[in-house]
Length: 65
Image (cartoon, rainbow, N blue to C red; front, top):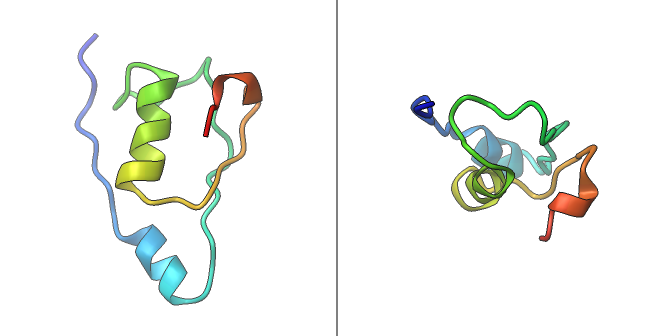
């Protein structure tokens, strides 16, 4: 399975500029987006690329940040 192209927008930056925090809802290890191949890759993309402030998940044992 080849991951789909990942596109990161400026939504988080715009939210932060408006005084808001971003917390995506909800990360599910059993339903990953097509642009990633693992939970670790998704977490890295969310925090390092999209610059989210936190996230909600049904799998807290898999999230280490």
